[in-house]
Image (cartoon, rainbow, N blue to C red):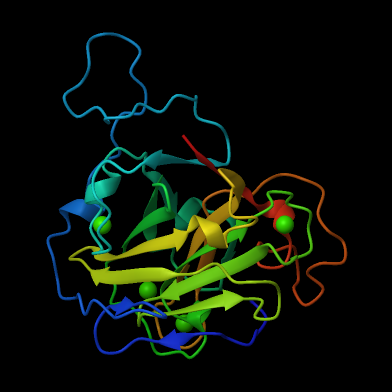
Length: 276
Ligand SMILES: [Ca+2]
Ligand SMILES: [Ca+2]
Ligand SMILES: [Ca+2]
Ligand SMILES: [Ca+2]
């Protein structure tokens, strides 16, 4: 199980938006889940014949293992829990039944799937997570990672050097919604502005991060990984896993509090997020 870290979590007010330094949107309530369940659009177009749902900006690079490709936003950014402005972004799919570096407790039946779309504009990186599970969402715990949650990891320098440096951060946003950035002692945190929206299938989390708060502020390719935590019965989490974990020599001195290497203490596991 994950070691306890001091949380830098900020509790949202009764609404579903949480914006440190800004006003909450107060956006919440059930919405149609179409946004959370729609298929990823096609990602390449090489002939004159184009599908009518082709993205406005075709991905110009072939899929690359472990790489999340962020697309230019296709509409004005609106932090509302809906993926409208990310309609042209590939949707990367994670199923806890087949997740990388999975940590599933005894007796847990994998029962959470999720998707991620990424986009960017002149000032921000946008991340859109859609989570689906049939069971009620758990949000009873103080630790973000012990609730139903999405998580992502940012290595702003893109060095994936192992030990968490000032440019390396773990972010967890849970269902309450509360977020934490870990470790709470290193460097300047990325600025998180996010909304969690319930859907009929689960929930979405839409995040935007000022590009100026990632690495040196000019990164268009940086270390990145993402995953989910599933808690199905209260208390500690029951399932955790990553979309992808890099195969690389691990940092021998990084995760001494864990039973094995984990993305929150060893950045050699991270993949990449790259602007298209
Ligand atoms: Ca949106
Ligand atoms: Ca780093
Ligand atoms: Ca759950
Ligand atoms: Ca549990």
